Image 1 (cartoon, rainbow, N blue to C red):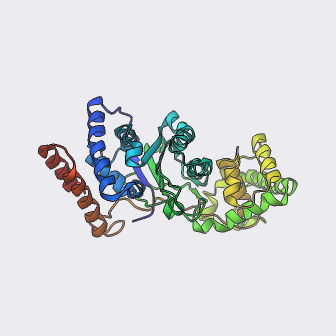
Image 2: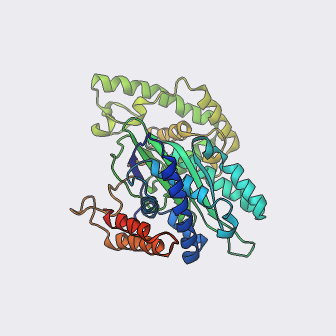
Image 3: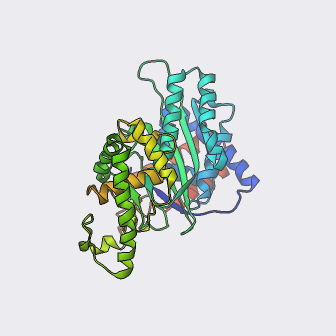
Length: 393
């Protein structure tokens, strides 16, 4: 499974009722077969695979390269299992827009109905909230999250039977008219703030050249230093912020005047980096709210980066400010590499961006075909779906 993020063109149209109803009906059959064949935990694992998720959307007859596939497929699956969640052992919370904000309440409701206990219920809610915070505050790639869905299988009281969970969320970039999908899978995550995503592929769109990637392994020093800085205290941190405010203004003027970075004491950047360095366009001078949040986090003294991010009020600007202070003042450079590295789910025929992964490709298609064959739908419908799968490139 490749690691990355799927990118699609924005879809402003509305799914017609006849298509949505069809997706719900077929989705009901597909989910039942998959759970019967593989079990609920395996279903959650598949949802966390963007290639598999995309293939399922194709089977259910939605446009393969449209952003609407994510939102409509999630809604169709949620409707397809309605009333059968306990029987299947899988649960889907959230969705697009305001529906995404209901995830905590929906998880709480299921926790009560399933009797899984407050501790396990709160853990699911925490993972949902943190995945959203990570992709909005630590993966600063120009995409605003507007869809958040949380899938989980039923945990058990038995030791070691914790169930599985997956997150599928999507962000939009109105500037280049694309959407980007982020996948998470519980069993793949060792650290919520370091390389937490499961399976990444990019379909269409372009990589962003203005990214601050604070979940990259290369940003480890930044994460450590950010935690240390808030632990030292507010007054010390604000002295560094004041230096950053002063020199961000100077940098902007120097860029206009064509003055090189070698004349700056606090910065040692190459010319190519200097022209696009985020500190040039950052303005901390007018943000009293930022000062308020920094005072709060310094008072809390979080013991690690994850707890720092989890604090209420901490968002993209707070994490960006700490990252830039760490780089400009202390030389801890974070990653500016866009995590979306690939252009196609399975590679390209001309080996661009990498050779076709025939094993993954064949496995995905054959699995989908076998599921379709075992559904209780008409033979003609089955043949149409299988033909569609065979035409996926």
